[in-house]
Each structure stands twice: as C-alpha cells, then as structure tokens.
Length: 438
Image (cartoon, rainbow, N blue to C red; front, side, top):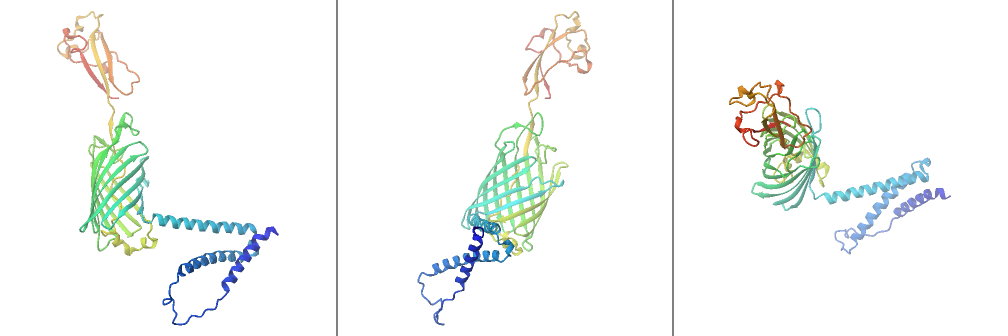
C-alpha cells in the first residue's frame, strides 16, 4: 500500500483540482454593468493573484494528469518521482534565467569575435563586454572588459570612458589598462572618438608601463610593450546599411618590434589595414581584413563577430530591418571601443660581453723584436714573442667559461693597436675594451 501512495495522491489531487475548476458559480451581470464602469474596490490585485495561482496550479495539475495518462507501465513511484524532479528543475532553471536577464538587461552587450587566419588557426579571437553605467541620452558613462588568447598569451583589458552628444556628433574619450596574464606586461591606453550617422573616427595611443623582462621568445633578449598609436575610420552605406568598410593605420616604435609576429621583427614598423564588413542582422557581422606593412609583411584574415545585446529580444536582433537603426548615431551609442587590445612587444639584445684586456711583454722574451714597433705590420708574425694577457669581465649576465687562444693559431690571432715600448704599463695606452656577442 505504501508503495502506491504517491500514485493515489497524485490522481486524487489532480481529480479534486479538476472538479473544483469545473464548478460554475451563478452570476447576474447586466449589459450596462461592464467592467469599465464598475468601481475599483481594490479587488483587482487579489483577482490577479488568484489568476496567477490558478494558472500555476493549472500547470501543475496538467503536468500530473499528463503523467497519469501516459500508461499504466509508467505509473510507478520511481517514474513519477523522476518526472517530478525534472519538472522542479525546469521551473528553477526558468526562474533563474528570467531573473538573470532582468538583472543584466540594463547592462549593455556581449561581443564574441571569431577570427580565422590563413592557416585555419583561431588566434586573435576575443571576448568583449560593454557596460553602460549612466546614460541620459546626452551623456554616456561606460566600462568595457575584454579578453583574448593569441600567440600563447592571455591578454586582459579593462577600460572606462565617456561619450557626449554635441549636435549631430557623438564625441568621447576613454582610458584602458592592458595586462598580459602570461608574461606580466602592463600597458596604458588613451583613446578618442568622433561619431555621426553611419560614420566613425577614432584614435588610440599605447604606452608601456612595465619595464624590460627576459624574453620567452628569444635567448639573450629582453622584451616589453611597444609604444605606438593608431587612427581608425569606419563607414556604412546609408542606402545599404548592411555593407560597410574600415581603414586602420598604426605605427609602433622600437628597434625590433613584432607588429607582424616574432618572425618579422622590424624597426619602427607601420601597417595599413583595409577591411570590408557585412552585417545582415544586428546580431552578427562577417568581415575580411587585409593588413599590409613595410617590406613584404602582410596578413589576410576573416572575422565573424557575434554581438548579443542583453535584454533585447532575440527576434529583434535577428530582424534585418533593425540594421539601419543600429548604425545611426543614437543606435551606435553603446558600440564597443575599437582599439588593439593585443599588447605588441618590442625586443632588445642583452648587454654584450664586455672584456677589458691588458697586454704586457713577458719577461722571458729573448728577442728584441718582441718590442712592438710603430706600425702594426711589423708586429705581425712574431711567433717567438710571448705576451701575458689579463682579462677582466666588466658586465655580462651569464658567463660559463672563458679562454684565450694561443697566438700561433693564425685563425684566432688578435692584432692589437700599436703600443710604444715606453708605454707598456697597466692602465695606460695598453688597455683596450673587447666587445664580443653574448
């Protein structure tokens, strides 16, 4: 009997609820007593509450009635328990999702950019989150958070900015802090914006905050964020707002900068990027960029960007008719800041091996020819001469071993400048600095 108690309870509850709904109370409302003319006695809220409870109860009753009519083979305590748990989980999930959407709805949009390179890799794919903290249709205060993974490095960006409507233009400025979680590099970014209908102009300046660090890309090299800037222009056709184009010019400074990757280090590199964009619906954009730099450096990429606006119905984000409004001045107020979130690095070689040498004639010399003459030619080939060389290492990072080759090894003979016989004293004209690569 106990085994079938949940089944009997479910059937009795569903039947009783169905019977209570089936009762019809007599009413006598004349045609002149319409709901609009009746006074409000404060019962509307109670009625709504009853309606909501009735609707909720109806859902539960319908669920259990459906469960009870699925067949006798399913009417087991285990089956009903599993279905009840599934129903409860569904209600909790739906409620939580609705709550999160209501909480996040005032807070902007999320953009996920999928970048596919020439080799089919996903380097450069990014995630951005835009949060408008204050917007009165004239002044906008916002934050933007970004993250990306590229070249085995994870980069995070956090920025704040303000935008102000001035006539038919939207002017703004922003400040960003960029951090390389993989290598600890830090960078500051300053940006400016000038937008109008279907047209955007912006510029960014990037300044290194972290100092030189040992490079993980090259041995005996150091690296740090490169100083640089860029200017950008983006436009959409008013008659065909789904089609757009962009232009980016960027310049970085340093003797060896990896604007096109570590395999193409350049001095003060610059690059021009031309891109075409297709935005069929507000939700996503497809584009192709061609980037050309100094020399033979170039890069071609295809980008797919998903821009989801939290709180906006999905059907509106998939409506092609809303694309035109999106690229208008008011529709683009909450657009993302366009900048290079990836930290470009510059490199430098570590200090070379700096060795100080002293050359003195050995006291065991038996030949007067060992005295260095006035011209270097006369001092060449004096194999019978013996010299003493003292070496002092002034500055170097890693020294494993040091040795000096015998003078009679012609391939490794070091020819010193002319030294007069009366000047062979330590610290005078017989001292030279020898610089060797590390």
